[in-house]
Image 1 (cartoon, protein in one colour):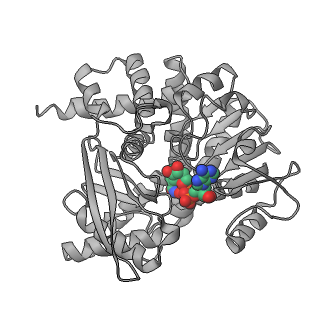
Image 2 (tube, protein in one colour):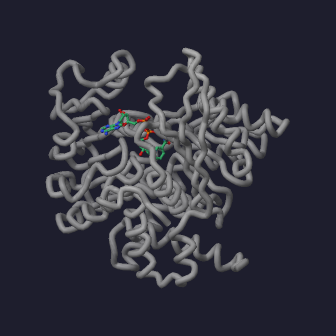
Image 3 (tube, helix red, strand yellow):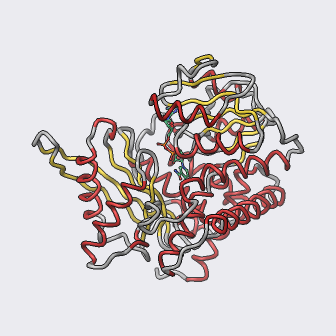
Length: 422
Ligand code: NAD
């Protein structure tokens, strides 16, 4: 399969995913034929999306939907709107969803979508027309039993409402289970908005326990202040940890005495960026990653910790809120330096776990209380953390490769039990 960005394989997320898959597969002896299936996406679609812009002109956007695996259930994964979206990124994100759903043992495969666009330069009307036309282009491959999208970077519950409405118009029946991350009141689940950030905080707590580090008052640095980073920082603050720095795409703020996170979040909402928050020093994202702290939470985007800056990391624990923030080359350096990494496919799995609950509630037509949703999520994450660490100890490898071993074993089992129609 052709991949983009061959020049620097460290920055190609799909090649990075493949390296981890290779390492795990060599430890658990996956059948060579099954390995070939797991190494390639099951299905991918690239679409041209014409959109009438507000000024009357017609623009054509490029969108993708990749289904890496449907072996364990319908494909599941978000849709990202960004100028940086590319096919290899979507392929990697899609495969990571397969492994993530398998790690937390929810009955989904992996999928992901993306549109190359700059949503900050588009009106709500343009975004709605883009979303609806994209949905109509995917109709042959999506649906509650086939592929269930969700929000990701720069998409939200409104995007999902448009997606669900367009799908329902074509299928002539209101189908809330077609997507997750919908608004509450339109089939969304209580707790879904907080799920990923809270899950990251829960995995941070379990990681501290596992490494026998004191929990109360530990120092935390967060890269990214969106749905994942902003909420993870808030929950870490609520758990009495000291969040000393946080960033967004414009840069970060630092105060070694700790940030008042509820006030920081209000400030961000009012001002659109973090810098300038009173009583803090401005820092850039590179300085932020290198700060002395107990827990570092990269929660922005891929390729943030690489062979270039891994040796500068002073955190004791990294909890990956983002997908793919750390390269395989960086993992080697971090491991040699004794940094514990709670990998993305475990650490940010709270989101897909509650997405699964949303899909279940939509299909039951009966909704759970928020406490019920979040308690169930916590149980799944705590059990998954134990499963991952048991796998890592059994195979004498890192938590990341331990998580891949667990996931690959589960997906390979589904292939073997279903048999090969080949
Ligand atoms: P978001 O759009 O809500 O927030 C992204 C944040 O990262 C923003 O604060 C943005 O300013 C910042 N950012 C973007 N580019 C940056 C850069 N180059 N340097 C520093 N900061 C930058 O997105 P999100 O939903 O919070 O997703 C963040 C990451 O978490 C992504 O990797 C996503 O795939 C992953 N993730 C999200 C969910 C979810 O439920 N939203 C679930 C699992 C994983």
